[in-house]
Image 1 (tube, rainbow, N blue to C red):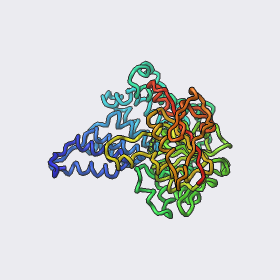
Image 2: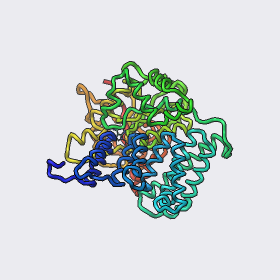
Image 3: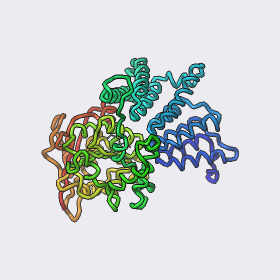
Image 4: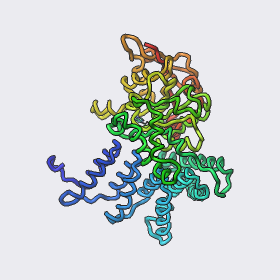
Length: 500
Ligand SMILES: C[S@@+](CC[C@H](N)C(=O)[O-])C[C@H]1O[C@@H](n2cnc3c(N)ncnc32)[C@H](O)[C@@H]1O
């Protein structure tokens, strides 16, 4: 920095931190925080830079790093954690099922708020934080079968929500969406609690069998084009996956509670992977029916859509969700648990690497991609192609994992992007033969039934039907987000694999 004539300051360092965090590289971000204090004179991190780091930890599920930095905010830098620091830290501790730590943190917060300490009062009474904080704690309690704690925290979240109903109506789109989504989340949790113990607040006997759900979660890595877990030699893959499950999905806590052992977690992965690191689908889904058609959603977000498909197709199909961001992978896992979905699995990591390395050829009947991210136009072609998933190379990788006559459906609100994807699919060929053909008979659930052609591939106007993998018409998070923004046009592409 200095050699380029730039005097480092906290703003520059925070921008660099953001970059590392967006790429999912929290170890590099931590080194940067260290480097700040070694500058002469030292650059002291402010709350914004420290919160940037904790937010980065959410992306990759780094619970330990976030928690220890949260403690240092006060102890090392003499700052007061704000609403954002608490919200992020509580979210991560809840994912780790660290119930004792959560209780301590909330107790401390309530005590401080009781004494009228401004920051603590703000955290607890801030509308979104009051809801999110208690909902996360309620969710961790529910996962552990701590029903009374789950109910009481859910009640607190509801109370905070009822105070803020007026604010949800106004406000900008993002906050409105956030509050509505928290409301949906509260309902989901409440129906899970009722299903498990009929609404009684008495302690119940059964807690969810988390180890069995975890055996269908493969957290590879949250780094883009990762050289992390997925680069590990295949004979070490089961060990690497088991370490991720322990450290990022609450596995450590389950071991501590004697619900499973480290060895059992690792041997589950070992049993479900071939020597080449491919997932053995039949074994993985033996409970729901290993011979059922396998369907995959790529870029699943928080998993609303895929969980609804799996639910509506129990004993008809097995579904796999693939998602890069760890917080979203965890959401998908919690939907598996809340919905008792034995026909859903989740793979966490970069789809371009997982599809190539861990999915056997010709095993998937249907691939769905809803609201994919269009490329970022940075002007740097190599950076763009690294970040853009839906490239011709990726469509070729999908072609390989699809069964004969397997289907690929892309659904989006982005007209121009859909046009370019249809054109790209229509152009794709191997040995002079097209790899995909347009499904000209695709049914349309809603829309005017119109279409246009791009290199022979139809771009339909409307919402795809069951023959394109949309067994049930439900909205995903991004679907709702755009709809609230009055962005209501929808388009889809439905193609069929041509054998070569
Ligand atoms: C616009 S969101 C759509 C999410 C979801 N389908 C929905 O409709 O709500 C795109 C999602 O793709 C995920 N994603 C982006 N690049 C990815 C990659 N290389 N591998 C896997 N997931 C990726 C993002 O993390 C994000 O959750």
